[in-house]
Image (cartoon, rainbow, N blue to C red; front, side, top):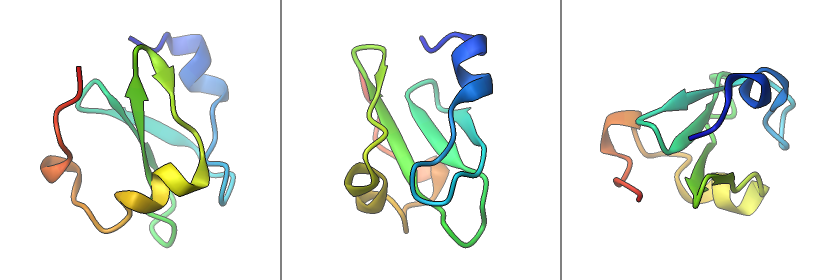
Length: 67
């Protein structure tokens, strides 16, 4: 689980907008034009632009469950 203090300072590496936690294992960019979603694997946010691009057009509710 990503701690609140870390969520408060994380930003999308592509557009620098704030990200929010979704479905416990995803960080979702809050910029409507960017729409990147970054997975959290083994409690480590995968904040690479390439990772965010993979799920850019996936709705939050359709993101795969991660463990």
